[in-house]
Image (tube, rainbow, N blue to C red; front, side, top):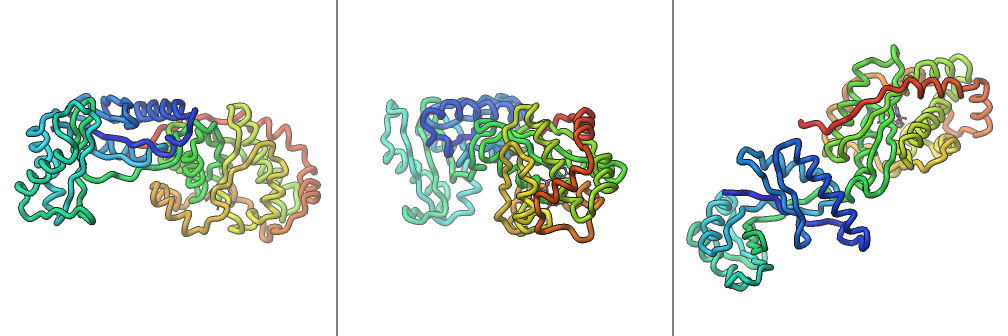
Length: 393
Ligand code: ATP
Ligand code: MG
């Protein structure tokens, strides 16, 4: 028996003139991601996208998992394919739905006939299939109001499809239709979640990570790679730029007043990230900051950080509690990696009493004790680039 995935288009149907662009991006994304699993045909017709495997071996569980992580999809279903012949449909329904029906007490059948050449009306199809299912599974009763299972039979151009419920998709907007943004990624819990949330709103991602060897280890960097590979299961592939940050941090420590260390460091991170972002065509930065979570995330500290930014900074976690952030990080499977204990460069020279109400002029004066520009340029010249692919898990 052949199984297929039927995808219902999400929010993108609302987008008027952009619809074609959104749909094309979604099709391209599905084709690229599914090609890593096997040979699939992906085509759109009648406001539905059809995903069909081209070889017998194809793992439909994996394909469905892959589809469930593509943004722009509100809902999808796995369905059995039958010839457009009532007896074939009945036989396929009994076989395909066996497990579901055995577990259910009540059901109803809904039919949609978009191929009007099919010689039965929708109510007739529902009646026929319903009777056949009652015969095959005599413990069942029909309940049209609150059934345990809704069986849907669709008669379409390419064939007949039999399915039970819809599966919820990843929602959002297809990645790439909203432009490109650069996430500042650490090994922590927050920034991978922030990256996921902005990709969900249609942004293609690139990532910048600051490493301070020997204070931070090779393992810490590898952890970030793994986090991004998990994020990429939703956002798609991306480039990761690792910036050597040791010299800059040492210069801050040696020359600036201690209570301003973190702020100056964060301003330099933003400066470097936006230079790389500009060069690579990104239009915004993304961070995992959450208001009031730590000293550098107060309203005043964020103001001092933003003062160096020439592009918008998206902080999707700003209004979220840690518990809410953790819930998402569990859902996208980054949590177990994030909690591995490796030092981040942010924590290597932390001041004992960081400023929570900094004055911008004072921060600037402290930062201007050193001409950081040559160090910024040197760090950028020594960036290491990696290609991040979605992890197969
Ligand atoms: P996270 O869990 O994302 O590490 P956090 O709560 O630990 O966040 P901070 O360490 O203050 O907060 O970092 C705030 C934000 O700065 C991070 O969410 C991330 O966007 C960015 N950031 C922190 N460290 C790095 C780093 N080593 N490289 C790139 N960006 C970083
Ligand atoms: Mg952190």
